[in-house]
Amino acid sequence: MLFVAACLMSLAASAQVLEVVSMQQLPIAAQADMKVAGISPAGDYILLTTGSNQGLQRYDLESQALTTITDAAGAGYNVQVSNNGQEVVYRETTIDRNNLRQNKVVRLNMYNQRQNVVARNQRDMKHMTTSDNLTTVSIKDRLIVLTRNGLTTTLAPNGSHLSYIWPSVSPDGTKLCYYVCGVGCYVSNIDGTQARFIARDCRAAQWYDNNTLVAMADKDNGHFVTESAIVAYTLDGKQQVLTYKTMIAMFPYVANNAIVFSTDEGETYMLNVK
Image 1 (cartoon, helix red, strand yellow):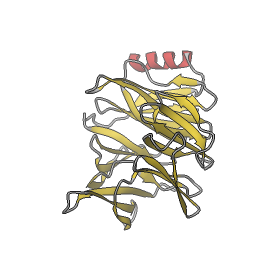
Image 2 (cartoon, one colour):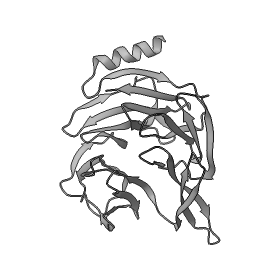
Image 3 (cartoon, rainbow, N blue to C red):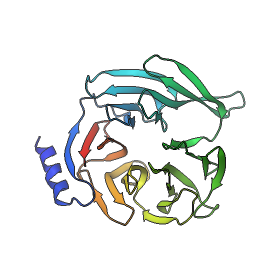
Image 4 (cartoon, rainbow, N blue to C red):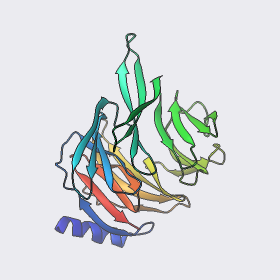
């Protein structure tokens, strides 16, 4: 309790972007190989996976029930949740006879267990996200692939010689956030024009709203993470550290005024913000 109180005092003192209402560790048994993989749009359950993205579990915040969705390899990598929270879209990774990695994309209804294979034998399908207007964005061959209104376009807002990761579309579908490896986080128009720099230490960014990003600012020594904080950034240059400096907080997910994240020790935390 003293730790949480100290956290909240520190956060309140530096509040600039979001108001932190509370922070709590969720009653999930900490496992060093466990991390958060997503949260439902309503914020009523979260998704968990392993450090290697093996399998997917659902944790219900009200009942505290933990159920296994799948044990598939790769299932925890950039999971998508439907707007009504009933379905999840995940991938199953296999190695074919030619020793090539293949990804089968599966859509699962968690209430009736109906499963539908969305795509088969997809390679290099990384960081796929979907906004409300059915725009999808992913990474292929280090570049951004945008599909909108049935038309697919390859984007390289900062140049095709660079490598892009962690793309995401703003809730209103008008802006694109992405990270340029070795450079930092940018936000552009949805077509890749008018790119503007946000911050170098703004990794794995999630949209809180159309003008605010929540991301991790981490440091490592070449072998493991030594520092990491969850930070909120506005598109006009403001930023606010949301977690206490003694925590190694990583990979945030945002929904319904809540931010969930994992620590390096496999603990799961929730920030309630407004």
